[in-house]
Amino acid sequence: MPLVPVLSRIERNGVKIDPKVLHNHSEELTLRLAELEKKAHEIAGEEFNLSSTKQLQTILFEKQGIKPLKKTPGGAPSTSEEVLEELALDYPLPKVILEYRGLAKLKSTYTDKLPLMINPKTGRVHTSYHQAVTATGRLSSTDPNLQNIPVRNEEGRRIRQAFIAPEDYVIVSADYSQIELRIMAHLSRDKGLLTAFAEGKDIHRATAAEVFGLPLETVTSEQRRSAKAINFGLIMA
Image 1: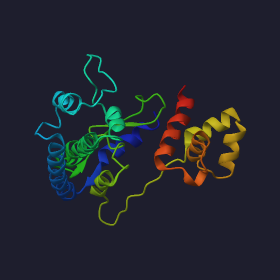
Image 2: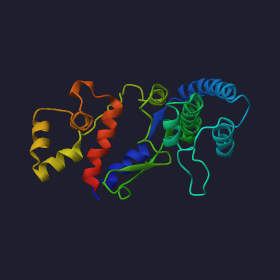
Image 3: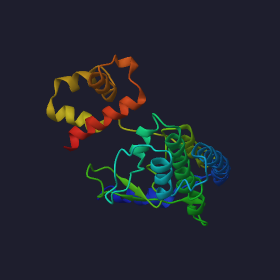
C-alpha cells in the first residue's frame, strides 16, 4: 500500500516522447523491411507473404525441402522463433525471416504505436503499473508496457532515444545489481555466491563460465543471458 501513491504520481506524470524520432525510425524500418522481403523472395524463388505462417511452411518445408524440426499442436511444421533460429544456422531464408519478424515487431509495437498513445492534453505517454501480477513481486507495466523497451540490438536501442526529458531535466537510470541473487545468497549462505559478491564478480558471467567451461573474460553476452536464466530458474524453482 505505501507504494500506491508513488506509482499513482508516476502514472499521472507520464513520460515525454519525441514522436519525430519514432516517425523517422519507422520510415527507416519500412525501407529495411521492404529490402528483407525482396531478399526473402529472391531466396525462395517466388513471392510470398512473410507474415503468413501457412505460406512460410509451404516455402520452407515443401518447396525448399527443409526437414521440419518440430510440429505444432495441430501437426503442422513449426515456424516458431526457436525453430527458425536453429534452421538459420544452415539455411539463409530462416535468418532473413527472423530479422524481418524482429523489425516488424519493433515497427508495429513501438515506432508506429507509441506516438498514437501520447495524451493530447499532457503530451506524454501514461502507462499503468501493477504490483500484484508477477510471481517475483516485481512491478509490471501495461498500455503501453514501458518496462520492455528493446535493448538487445541496435534497432531496438534506438527506440529508447525517443524518450526524452523536459527542458532543464535529465533522465536518470538506476537499477539494483542482481538483487534477487543477493537475497538468495544472504538467505542460503551459499559460500560460492557470497564469495563472488564479496569479490565484486558478475554472478551471471561467473555462472556462464562454469557451465560452459570457459575463462570468465571470454563469456559472451548470449552465454551470460543463458546463465542468467539458470540462476533465476533456481530462485523460482
